[in-house]
Amino acid sequence: MLPPGVDPWPAQNQYTAHGHSARKADDFALARELRRILPDETYPGVLASCLGVNAIFLRSPSKAAYKTEVPSAVRRQVERFCVERVRRLVTIVQPRHVVTIGLLTLELFKDTPTESEPTVEKTKATETGRGARWIRSAGTIATREAYAVLHLTGPTGMDAAEREAITHFLRSLVGPPTPVAG
Image (cartoon, rainbow, N blue to C red):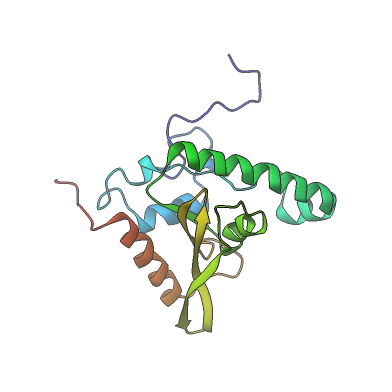
């Protein structure tokens, strides 16, 4: 039995159907966006088979609080610790695809490279209503090919063309839709 206040490992990931938890907060914006991109009706079981992990799995009230309240030397130690654990997890799980949500997430692995990992190379720029900006990049994590996309719920937002390009790219990794027979 877990001590009070300690959450158990979830029976299913939080990207799947909302409402699986008693906590309303579990239906967070990223989960809703992933369900929009890969709905279970046309991509059955895809999100349920995904493993999601934060690259930096230290909890803080906010990113701003973390940056202002935790000294930079400590943040670098935390990043190295967390990134190494994520590498180990990728090595053990051997996923078909590694996708980071947020371009800077993949950059963390470049900043702490191993001998087998080349630096991150940005591979695609897209011309949108905002002009050209990077919407995805590629690199490796634990010798597995890894892709990064703009954060799906990030503060800079996306226009419709960027959202469509990212949706198309993520769906291309999964393969063609296979609608659930009804």
